[in-house]
Image: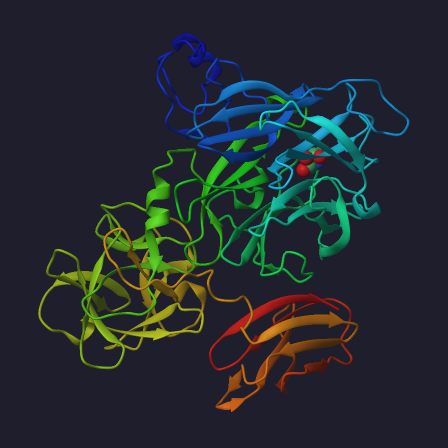
Length: 575
Ligand code: DGJ
C-alpha cells in the first residue's frame, strides 16, 4: 500500500493521523478532517456501519461521487486508525426496474449496516434505498455475501411491515435475534421490526418504539440488559441537538429519553455531526465509540467523520468533544468502575453525576477534570467512627479535603471537623457529600459540565450538580463493583408500564415493592413537561395489574415516576 507523502499530507490535511512519514502508522483520530486509507486514497464511506470479526474491523459506508450515490465502500483495519481500502462491498449494477428490485447505477443507498447470521453463515447488509430521484420511496435494500467484505448481492428491496423506512440501522442482540430500526411515518416515528431467522426480512412483529418525536440517524448499543440509542433530530443534512434514549426492551414503546448526550461547546449541533453507529471495541469490557458524520450538504462526498469515545460510567451516556484523540482513553474509561459500597481504607475517585468528569486538582483548585492521572484526585477514605462519615486523604500525601467557607481545599493538618464528610447515598447510588462542619454539600459551580469547573460548597440540594459517585480503578484494586447498567431502569418489581388513553397500567410482582414498610405498594407520581405534579397515588399491587386512572389530563407528554423504598425511575409517556 502506498502511504501519503509528506507533501500530500500537508495539502490534504492528513488522514486519521497527522503522519508526516509515508510509512508511519497513524495513531490519532482527527475529527472533521479528510481521512485517508493506507494506500493514500481519501476514505469515502459515509454514514458508517462497522462489523468486527477475528481481529478486523470492517467499515462499510456510502460511497459518493459528489452528491450521487455510488454503492457501498468497505475498509478494513485492526486498530480503527489505519484502514485498508477493499473497494466496493456492493457495486451498483443492472438496469432500473419498475418493480424497484434493483441496485442500478444512480439508485441511492444510505446508512449501510452489516451483521453476520450465525445460522446461515452469511453476512447480511441492510441499507436505506431510494430510486435516485428523491426520498419518497422510503425503502430498504437487503443484500448478502459469503465474506464480510463482500461482494454483496441484492436479495430484495422492501418497505418493512409495509412501513416507510428512511434512516435505518440493524442490531444483532446477544440471543442472536436481530432488529431493524428505522425512521418511519414521514420521519415522525422510530419503528423497530424483529427480523426473520435468516435476517433477510422483517417478521410480523414490529413496534412504534419512539413515536411522534421526529428522530432519525439511529445508532444502538447494549450494555448488560440496557439498550442505548443515539439519534438526531430531523433537519436534513444540517446538524441538530442529539438525543440518547435507553430501554430494557428494544421493542418497548416507552424508551427513557435522556436528552442531548453532548456536554461540551457546540453541544446543540452534536459537535456538528449526526450519529450513524455505536461501536463496542474489542478487548475491553466497557469501551464504546460514537461514529458520526459531519455532512457537506453541497457535496456529500467531501463530508468528514466525527468519532468520539462514549462516557458511560455514570449510567447516563455522555459525549465530550475532542478535536483529536487517541484510543488510550479507553484504558481509563474501562478501568474506572463504581464501588458497590464505601469501605474504610479503600482508595476512590469521585465522579460527577453531571458530566462523568472526575474531582481533580488543577491550577491549585479543586475542580472537575477530564481523565488525567496527574490531575484526578485519588482519596483514601478514613472512617471517623460516625455514621457514613469519612475523611478523604489524598493518596500518597498527608493532605485532606477540607471545607473552607464556600470553597473546598486540600490541606495538610490536624484532625479538624472541617475535614469530615458525610456520604448520603441515594437510590441511584450517587451521593450527596455533606460537610460535617457546615452542613453544606459539594457541588459543581454553575452546574458546569466543563473540564476545569470549580467545586464549591452550597446549601443542601439534590440537584445533579451536587451528586457524586464513588469509583475506583479496578486494575489496581479488587473492590466490589456496582455496574450503573446493572440496575433496572424501573424498580425490579414493575414489570410493565402501559399508557393508554387517560390511564396507566402497572404490573407489579407480588411482594416485590415496599413503601414505608408496607409490601406491594408502589408510589406513582405524574409530572407534566413543566415539572408540575399533576397526579400522585400509592398503588396497591398484589401481583395483578394495578391501574391508575388519569382523568382530566390533556393529551401530551408526561413523566411518570415509579418508586418504592429502594429505587425510583422515571418514564416519559404520551397520553
Ligand atoms: C438526513 C439523513 O440522516 C441522511 O442520511 C440523509 O438521508 C439526509 N437526511 C438527506 O437529506
